Length: 511
Image 1 (tube, one colour):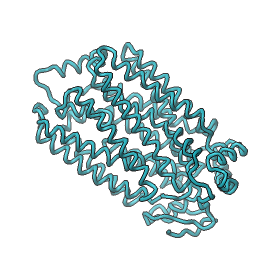
Image 2 (cartoon, rainbow, N blue to C red):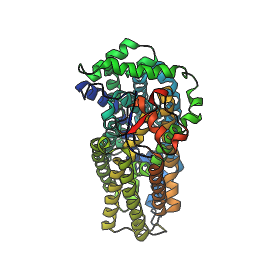
Image 3 (cartoon, rainbow, N blue to C red):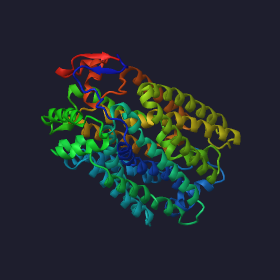
Image 4 (cartoon, helix red, strand yellow):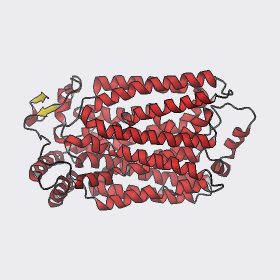
């Protein structure tokens, strides 16, 4: 069976008498703030590349094409060097996310988040002071190391810290902070664009602010009980669990369940990346690759990065395009709040399916408008009412992504892996996410130039594929304790042939 909840006999129940305490809220908010740096970078990159002062300094060829009397609207920004400015970060992030797995096992998730904040701070400083393209690329790579470390550690930290009943809501906090960072970046771009000559330096340099937030936040929170137990720090794990669960919780029972899972994993302590290729981890690996890859193939990341460019192509002026990006950022933030409120009430699968259907309709509609108004040659001017329609449809698309594939891409990988391959699995997931982002951001402007309005049909087709994938292969994980997740896979109509439940968990009942 593809969906449904599970209660497993003799398995951890996830109910240890605790509730949502002030401490767990603060701890999870601090960890989720790791999303700020990713969100700020997504928002800032597209806005800066639309600023004339930035283009004049580093990419004068783009400005010359913009000034041409006749130009193909789809191809104005087609520059591999310009897209390399954006995409180089994600190549560095891919490398960092894979390295972060081994580092996490040695020093813990809290330390990895600290390292991520420090790298991002350094990258912000280098970019703000850049005098040539080489400095820009170096700064972007430092930012990428920061994002790679933080994206690997923060979602798993949230999954391991949050109570099972509310794990989805707490883990989607990462996407909520990503939305806050994105909106802050769009507002910064809108203000900085009015500062001649050095406004772009302000936009890039203020990335140090979210970096400082994650640095301070990581200093104020403990490591997760699971991470502490992996490193043999039993009393620290007990103290951390007591702090986040409160005095009414049965801390010893929960710690015993977590310790049992950690002890079972010690036999597999080495070679996690090789082990994850084994048959028994087949469903985990497939989901770890498919979910982040499909998230990027929705097309949302290129819309988020290049929304000012997209809105200029659709007929907005430079300032209007930046304001459109601000509106889009606000929509993303609002939809993240919707996800927080609904993910543990309705489950993961319904949000995936509803979001997918809406995204398909919006992308087909945008393709139709741009095809009928700008045409294949890209030299027609879009009427304002159609430009506003593109903005509205893009906002609806972003909202549907924001309650579905956006937050759930961080929720699913963080909760499905057994503890022995959890760090490696999250590293694979983040690496796929950043690798796909690198490819798409490097190729989107060329694709837009070549495919024209059919670019959006291309992404709509992928959303249809991934929605069908969710229907067939994604089990419902709402409310299932991490230590009992094996039973979900064992009862699935397809994945059950790969995963056998542990001896004590042989009996599984559908709620």
